[in-house]
Structure formats: C-alpha cells, structure tokens
Length: 438
Image (cartoon, rainbow, N blue to C red; front, side, top):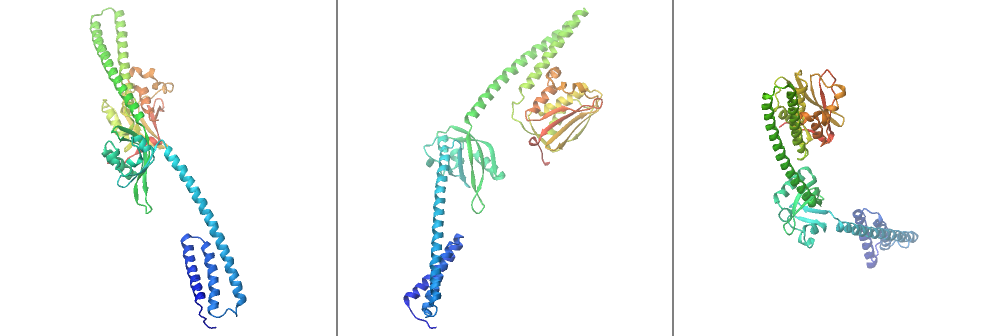
C-alpha cells in the first residue's frame, strides 16, 4: 500500500469530510436524523476516495462498488427525507399563515380591546378597537406612548392599578377611567395579568378591557335619582313624624281633660294608631337604605359591639367567641345584631346572657346568636320573620333577613322552646374569611 497523489481525488475526499462534519452539526442543531443520511453517504464516498489515494482500488474493487452503491442509496434516502421535511415545513407555514390570518381577523373585529404594555408602562401593541374607542385615527398614534400620561384621566390611578397587578399577578373586573383623544372620559372594566419574557422575567402587563361608559352613566343617573327620592322621602318622613309628635302631644292634653271612660278607650286606640304609623315610618326609612351602598367586608365582632352600644344591656352578660372573622355583607349588618339584641330585651326579660359564636360546616360558616330566655314557640319560628309580625317593632327580624339576603346570607331560628332563642346566620363559602390580627 502506497500513497498515490491525485489532486482531484484529494479535493473530493476533503469535500466529503466537510459534508460529514456539517451533517453531524445540522443533525444536532435541527434535532433531525435526515442530515445523517447525507453525511453517511458522503462518508462512504470519502472511503472510496481514500482507497484510490492509498492505491487500493484494484485490490478491493468489488468492495468499492458495494460502497458506492450504498452511498448512492443513502443519498437517495437523504434526499427523500429532505424533500419530506420541506413539504412538512411548507404545510406548517401555510397552516401558520392561515392561523395568523384568522386570529388577525378576530383581533381586527374584536369589540373589546386587547392591549400589551412594557415594564415602563408604554403601549407595545393593541387591537384596532383601542384606537376606535379612544377616538384616534389609527394605532400609529397610540403605540409607544405612556399609558399613564396619555390614556389615563388620572395618572395616579394607573400606578394603583400597576401596583395591584404586580402584587397579585392579575386583576379582574377592575374599573378604570381612561382619557380619549378629545379629553373626554371612557370608563372601562379590565381583566389583566403579568406576562413574562423568555428568561422568566416580568416583561409588562397585558389584558382585555371593555367599554362600560353607558353602564357607568346609567348607574350615575340611577344613583342621582335615588338620592333625590331619598331626600324627598327624608323630608316627607320628617314632616309626618313632626306632625305625629304634635298629634301625640294633643292626645296627651286631651287625655287629661277626658272623664268619660268610653272616650278614653277611643283615645287609647287613636294613640295606638299614631304609634303604629310612627313605627311604620321608621321601618320605611331604614328599608329605603337597604342596598343603597355596596356590600363590603365587615368585621363581625366590631359590628356586634357597635350594635349593642346603642342598647342598655347592663343586666345581660355577653360571651363572644368570634375573633378575626369578616363577612361580605350590606353596610346595615350592624342593624341585624341590633335587632337580635333588642328582641332579647323586649321578648325575653328573664334572660341573663347572650352569646355570639361561629363554626364552619363543610362549605359554609354558621354564626350563632343565642340567649337563655324562654325561647320561641315552634309555630312562631318562621312567623317572627314576616313583615306583619314585626312591622310594629320598627326594623325587626324581617328587615334583618332582607339585609342578609343581599349577599346570599340566610337566617333562621333553631332554638328549643323553653331553653332560649337561637338564631343561625349561614354564610356561603365565598362570603367569609378569617384575617390575621393587627
């Protein structure tokens, strides 16, 4: 065996070695075996060229024929898979273009607004509905601008919103007042969240917002109308109460002058009717405030203590086992506890103790208010919550049930007659929470 220098064959060998190296790199980069077939084919071609340079052509001629046939076979296989991969890529590109076109059409016709901002609060992208809603001619006028300075009526609101999203990761039905191109307001409700770059770092905020301007205007008009009605009712209630106060005064003067028992009975009935009218007016005044303000998270212990502060409960001992509990209820929650305690004073004069506690039962929370008085007869357990039964006592338990029902809370009397009244207030899972002491 000796080396036979042939420039053409040597160049072919070097070329084949280069193709093998490139094929290995291509396979590792693309995670595909297809390039290996090409590399194997040129490796076999290189083997035949090396045999020529080493003057082994005549000695292994049959083997070289087999090697070259195998090389061409691998070239064919490699070209087949290259063509197949090219067809697959082409179909994927067409599918991608179709998908992009479909989602672009969805985005263009999207009635709500999709937006994305960077970490500095600049608008990176948004659906065309952004420009339409805010009164701009095109998105080119909007992109790259500061959200807080250019699109918020109050830039501080943007900071509050940004802090919320960065703290919790998202926001749901968050109401924002945006600024249109002409300076007028656009009220929107947004669901937004953080998005991240490839390294996992927060890149900004993106989300969807919906125009609720008409809803806000309707709510304002309704609120204004309710305020006017409330003012009118307040004036009317006050005038009638003043008239009843004067009428009661005249009744008392008349009582001092009457000597006829028959007339005195009539007078007592008249005084009773006036008292009923006064109680009904008080009930109506409280009822008109029901649902006037939004429900909120309220501390149960604090609400109870505020309620009892308006009553003389000196003869009753109190047992409270209800720390750190908040429920989502109408702001009139305090009135509920007031009514419960007032009923103890009125209907259970022999009671010496009241207690308030709470316990969880599956997916609900039960708040228990009880006393050690005579209790409620079985046939009156539901009747005590009726308007007719309680109207003469002002708010009563009827109004208490109405207050609680606003946020899905129920109340019922479950005590055993002769062993004290027991009221169970049942709160749904989403309507209560325990908070750490501060």
